[in-house]
Length: 185
Image 1 (cartoon, rainbow, N blue to C red):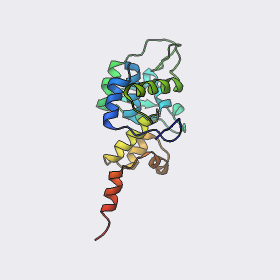
Image 2: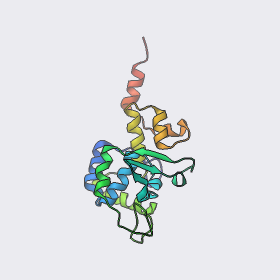
Image 3: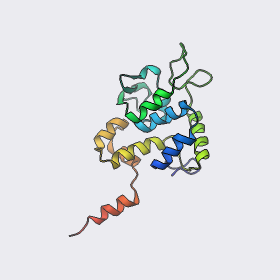
């Protein structure tokens, strides 16, 4: 868990996610931004770099130039849970900037501003240890817990190797208990 900016961002529970999206995040823009991070497993920087034209044909395209390793473009199908957040948010029209999440200055919203928005939302609902990376960790852990093959999660998340991906996945005390319970004869 993240403490004073150190450590990994918390993996959010279903209850915490519900409270965060219902009561913590106050604007359609903020809910849409963090819903994209959650429902696609993307990094906050990838979501902030999205352009209006990156969402089409029921997919979101994370361009190679905006991904961490700049190795390849990822196209993710828009899940049903994300559709409502995308529909409720319309970025202000700006012919000079096609950013999906523009700031008041007209440029793309910054990572530090996204972090401030999230910290304020978490204070409103009384949840600690959350970072912008929590949504990515939560998404990847939920997929893993649902039995999605690691190779599929790797493709969605854009990780180059499985070792890096596995560091994202949280193992619960119940899962450890179940794992050792199957040992024996």
